[in-house]
Amino acid sequence: MKTFLLRFYKAFLLLIFFVTASAFSTFNDDSAMAPVLTSNVDSMSAFLENKSLIPETAMLSVIEKLSEKAPSVKTGIEKGVRQVARLWQETDGDTDVFTSFCLENYISDSEEKKVVFLKISDYMEAVNGHFNEMSNRLDWHVTIETGPILPIDYKFSQLSPRAHFTEDLYQSKIAFIIALNFPKCTLAEKETLGVEPTRLACDD
Image (cartoon, rainbow, N blue to C red; front, top):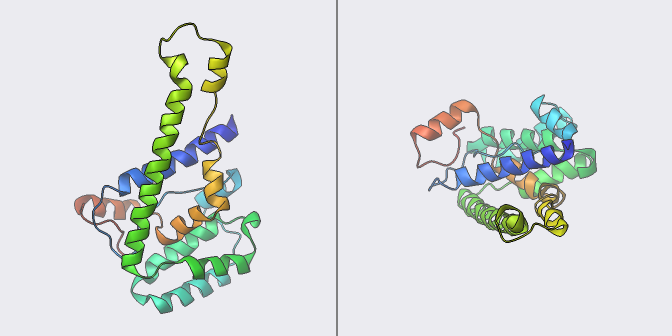
């Protein structure tokens, strides 16, 4: 039950982020809103406690190198790098792998980042939409009166098409790309976005 609730929590956060963020029409090249994605109980605890397996010196080195390419968004870069570091686990790779990942996957071009954001939103909308459709079909004979409910109907209704989706996002490093380029906003930044609904990103 604990594993199921954790998976549901992670998938819910991911869905809420992209449904909400896709409502904004323009993009700023600073840091953007992002979900607090976690791949297991340990990483969730580490994220909430602001802990990281990645040494501070490694994070600072990555931040400095990326900031040389995009000095105007250094604060956003630092947010993204530190967020990925808090989510990073031993199974994701050592410090060298972390460093290479950040340097290769940070998007410094604001136009490219906008395109990537919209594409991710489109992918997530499609995936979650089809998951919902599959879930509805699997529950159909249990929730809709179509005749006697048989044991096989209960078996199918208990299936969860999205059960391993979040884990797949981490294994493919997609979740880390999102966390790096679209780091989580503070409450104050979200309130600013609410006042100016045409902006998508948080200010540095």
